[in-house]
Length: 103
Image (cartoon, rainbow, N blue to C red):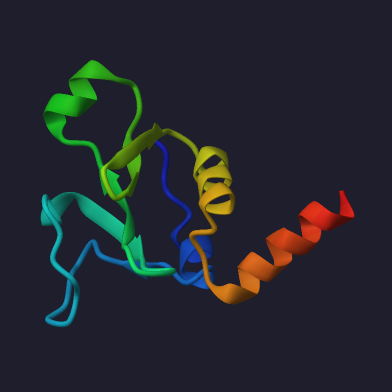
């Protein structure tokens, strides 16, 4: 099982939900949510797969936007999902947009 790069997620504006506080938002399967961000009107979160889900796949986590769930198993896959969905703070959004222009 791989380790999510929590330091990078924090720099990009994500909040750690593995040990929720009183002010933390509540989600379905709250105990499986590891990180979350709210770049607009909806929450995007990273959930650990349940034990039943892990038996069916080799993936470890899923990236959830509304009802859309994408399973992933590496930090590179996670970074691609973050860039594609602009699931980060404004500073990183700007960097990603500039990078697209410069390509």
